[in-house]
Length: 152
Image (cartoon, rainbow, N blue to C red; front, side):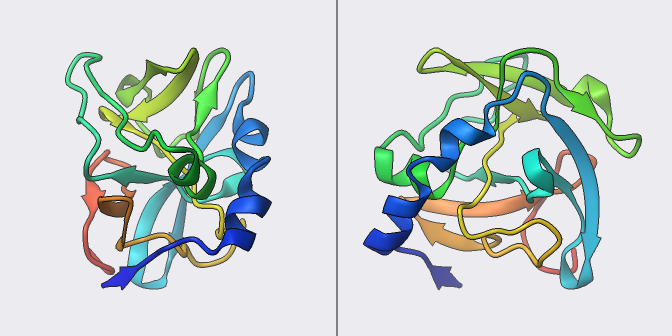
């Protein structure tokens, strides 16, 4: 398992990233790559992740535990100011939102969604199976399940 501690340069660079991810209508899609299989992507076609210390929402009671500026700079929340669009491979009934610091954070199957500051669209996910900020970060599959191991 890889432990991630963001270097100061990454924290400084990522500072402006979280605001850039807020969109009127973010779109969730599905990508597939090597060992990861199919996983959900969000704004900018970047992979999205769940955090094991978040409260998984059943009926809207999801809660976000990544709240420090350092955590949110490395792991920006996927937010929406309006509706969330989904690609044909995803179940729109699994889309939701949870309020956090005055923003609507997108959830899928009850998991608040994040991106990772090191990820680039079209490249292999860099944030999967990372332990940082007191928990672990995992990709989410199109059924809304956590991808705990590569290739599962």
